[in-house]
Length: 171
Image (cartoon, rainbow, N blue to C red; front, top):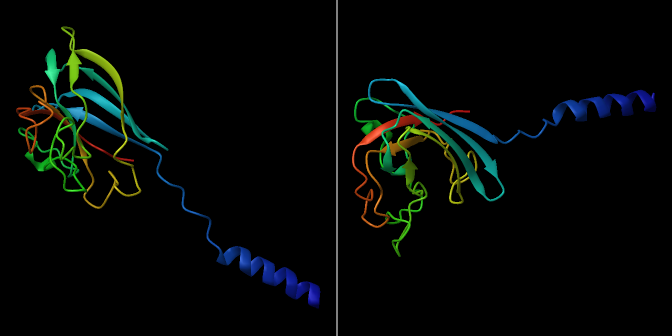
């Protein structure tokens, strides 16, 4: 009888303990222009050092473009203002070269060649996918490409111009 109790207790204990939740370690965003045409994709991977973003563009105008994480997971054309401001959980000033910055969503400019095609990897050390500060929080986040380059200093958005492509970050 003791043996049956022990086995039953073991089974009950095993069933009562839920397996640990697996952390989200990958996400993606499909970038679309104001007309809804797909112009790129971002594959995001959580690493011990931050989020590694592999960006592939095809169809963005050549030249220098700001590339940011925005605070809201909405990309309503034509202006993508629905994506809100830059992702900025620490309430800092904008700019990689600003002594009071940067925002967690600030990243280096993209240099798109004449072909309009670009593949680049960027590590953002200030964000995570599902731990604080999380890109996959309650209101989500978006990846935005701007019309012009970020000046890396001017608050709140680096004089980066219009938002020309936007993609919601999803699991």
